[in-house]
Length: 258
Ligand code: HXC
Image (cartoon, rainbow, N blue to C red; front, side, top):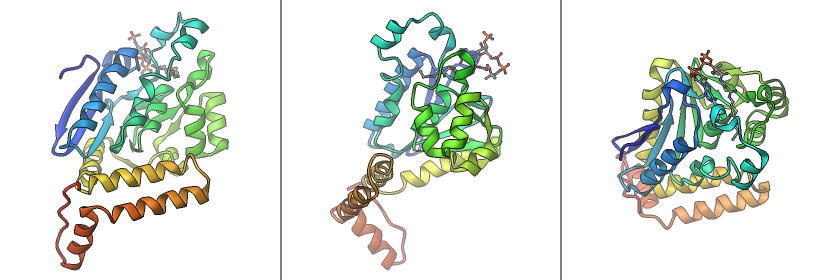
C-alpha cells in the first residue's frame, strides 16, 4: 500500500512508519491520521512483525496538529466530531510495541503522539513542547495528562502554561524519553531496540506492555495483582518453557510466539 502522508517499510521483523509531510514539518492532519491508522493496523495484523517504529524527519517528528486545518473550526465542529478522539488515539489500541523515534520538533499534537507510543528514543536535536497556549488553546490529545505523568506537575504545568520547550537532555533528565542518541544514529538505534523486542516472544512482550500500561490506570495493589496473573500466564506459553530451557542449556532461545 502507498500512502500520501506517511512512508512505510519493513526491516526484518520491524515495521517502520515515517510521517511524511515535509512541507508542513509533519503537521498532523486528518488524512495523515487516517494513513497512520491503516498502517498501524496492517502491522498489527502481520504475523511477521514484532515491533513498530514511528518516526518523522531529522527536522521534525511533528510540529503539532495542522493549524491551517483547525483555524476556522467552530466549537460545534470540534465537539460534534469529538476532534482528537477519533483517529488520533489509534496508536494506543495497537497491542504490539510502538517506539517513537523523535528528532527535531515534537510540539503540541506531535508531543502528544510521541507520548502515546510505548517509549520515546530522542535524537540530540529533539525539542518537546505543548505550545497550544500561544494559539489561544490547550493540549487536546492527552498532553496535560501524559506529560504530567511523565515529568511531574512542575515541568508539565510550566510547559502547558508558558509553551516553553524542553530540549533532549532535559527530556531525558525528566524521564520523558528513555534515552538520547546522536541524530545520525537515531533511526539505527530505534531499529536496533525494535529488532531486539521483535526477537522476544511476542505474546509475552504484549503481556509485559499491557502490565506496564496498567500502572497508569490502577492502584498499586490491583496493578501488582494484574502483573502477577499475567506472569502466571507466561507459564502457559511454549516460549516461557523454551526461554528457561535455553538458559539452562547455555544456548540462544528460539521463540515461536506460542
Ligand atoms: C500547520 C505548520 C505547522 C502546524 C509548521 N507548519 N507547523 N502548518 N500546522 N502545526 C508549516 C509552516 O506554516 C510552514 O509552512 C512550514 O510548516 C515550515 O514551518 P516554519 O514555521 O517556516 O519553520 P521554522 O521557522 O523552522 O519554525 C518551526 C516551528 C514553527 C517553530 C516548529 O513552524 C511553529 O511554531 N509551528 C507551530 C507549532 C505549534 O504551535 N504546534 C502546536 C499546534 S496546536 P509555509 O507554507 O509557511 O512554508 C496542536 C493542538 C493539538 O498541536 C491538540 C490535539 C488536537
